[in-house]
Length: 118
Image (cartoon, rainbow, N blue to C red; front, side, top):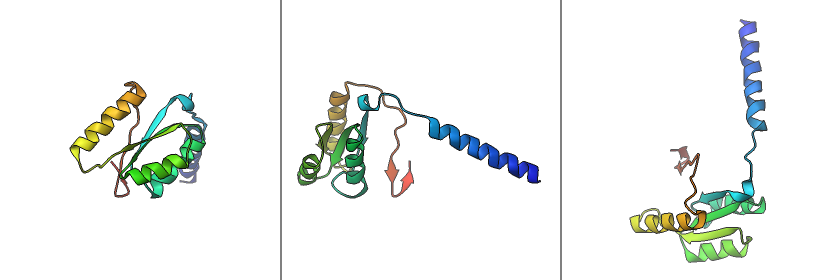
């Protein structure tokens, strides 16, 4: 019994050590698209990633929110107006992202919906 528990704990720490060692190469050449950047979590995440040198594509609901975010960040951060409840707004934002990223392929995209990963 104790041997199994020790093995499981050892495997847990080995897996954790391995995952923490993984590094994404060329972060400064990659883009991240964040919605809800007017305020709150999205705004804070966009500013932090900009400070770390990533290229941030930030979607805001209002022009005022986008302007405030642009004033607080570097040229690496670009903003777009996006209302996720309107299909035409989503289509326009999709086209905007494609123009900025030159149709690069995205990997590991995740969305958050009411605190659940979808």
